[in-house]
Length: 269
Image: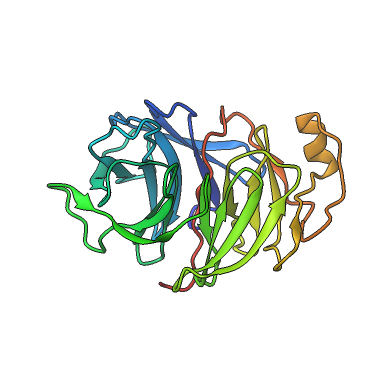
């Protein structure tokens, strides 16, 4: 899911990575507000990101590491029932890799975080070509098993998520600033909220839970509100650290929550 601060909504896909024919906007309660259809040819869509008024779609999945290139796409319009799009082909400098996480800086710089063997953070060239392959630049090593990523609102930190941990990196030096355990573990996605003040994490279902940025050493435990617990059939619980109730929602009518990769950056990088 990508937080669209211009449209005050969140974008999700139709949950079909190999085709992804529909992009869906949902409001803060999780209800569908509009859809955009397209006929782009995709292989394995794994991520969405929002920056500079544009929605970016990351066709970056490659579990067998056999693709000769990955691609990032962006619809030219998010109004109406259909859309044309731009697409950029990208290649890794060190061979094909699988990835599930993508983030886009406020300047429009695209970052891909690979997983599998020797996981790393890669940055796309600042000027992208649509006529040929764009070679990614390896910026830093990454934790194993990263499933999503998001920049903090001040643009100074990048938060990487795995199934059970958060890792906060300095977005300029890539130094690890803090880590936190997500409990209970499960889910794959992380995003900023529309206000840019906190994080959203997916659980094992379509429920999305809100939390504050974890402090160093804190145990990050998003807790469902009573309404969210009722919607998902789960029991409500209290957070042990840094969670915020009252802003939680379940995506209703949006199909499968396959992706959460949002970027809210108020300070250009």
